Image (tube, rainbow, N blue to C red; front, side, top):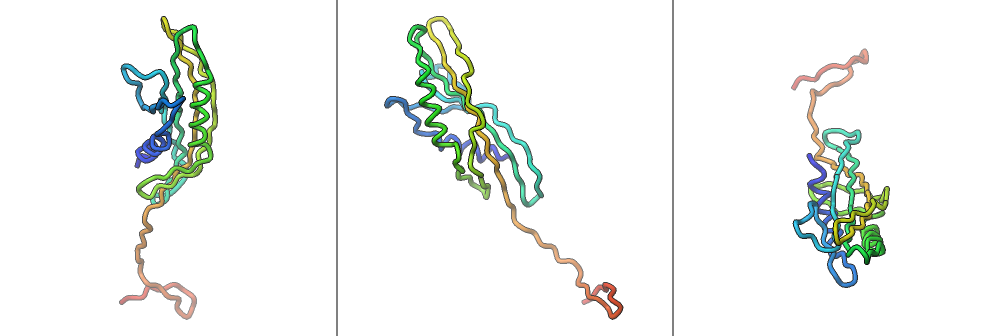
Length: 164
């Protein structure tokens, strides 16, 4: 049972509609060959199983969101990455995402936000803001009851099987 099958689509749905100055900011799990100037990568998902039972499972899930903004080398503005990161925080930090299939999601927590350094490639410079967001997920399966043999106490206080 992979909780990322439920969490990743919920994160994509929560981040749909990101906009910077009227321009849509798409979210990808892999960068396109020709990505736009501003986009977000949902990368490095991690799942750690937390103690539970077969009918009640729990996981700690984290994703790394890389806000990528690209500029001509002499016109770099890190504000764009910060504004997009702020929109992401508004949508995910302290928010419980709706999940399907009986999965439940606790409120997300942004556990880190950092400047990952800039990449300069020829005539352009790329500015990154990386956010790591964490959720606890749980799944409660159906309870299964098995009927065992009927028992009763005899007059001496001993357990006895009752035969039908």
